[in-house]
Length: 288
Image 1 (tube, rainbow, N blue to C red):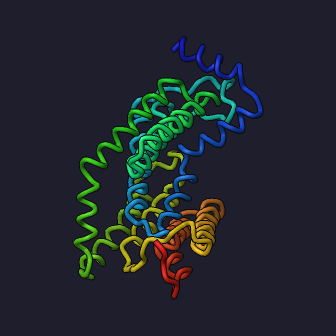
Image 2 (image 1 turned 90 degrees about the horizontal axis):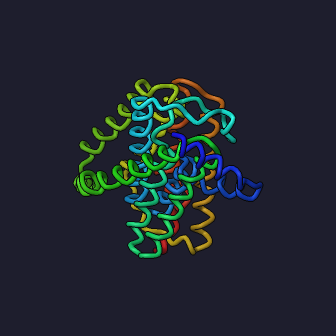
Image 3 (image 1 turned 120 degrees about the vertical axis):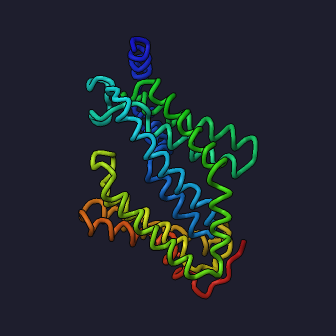
């Protein structure tokens, strides 16, 4: 751990207001707020497959990284090195690094362009490095998180993606099966509410409600086609839909608790994944 301590101190020796701002911004690529914005925007633009994939990756990265944190039980860097925080929960692996690697890896894969793979790799690396810069993680924490994120992505692509796509396609025209799966979605959210430890970064009711709302909305009937974000009307509607969803989540997070928080988060997720796009684009033809 001596070299890791030396590395953190060397990185912080070049700290400046500009680097603070830069690493705060790039660090959001490993946080849930940025990816929730992206997921909500994808739903608004009719890209349900990508929205659901990022939702699944975000959840899997969150749960696997937090579970491993408490299995490994590695202490954080000393409090005097933590420039944000302080944080006293376990350190390895870094959840930010896990989420950045898995989600940006998926973005690069969907783009299928060489420059996207390079850009996403650099951004994921910088998001991971930000956690070391602010003294919140040891270097090996972010390396472990980065590797875990790639493992989560590979597992999703290899084991889940095609099966989920086939399931959604098979549900077309089967109302009873769709209703049953919708009920199971709500039950999974409730299980997440009651079983997720309260010290895992976010309130369990908030997480459970968001799971229920987002995936329930994705199961509801929707004839939306792809929408071109270059169209000003589509762009403004997307921004408005995302803002309403995020404000609903913020209200639920700050002012509600327990079942009320679950319901508030569920409604925000349902708005973003189904109601918002349906209402805001009612009667408007989509331009792909």
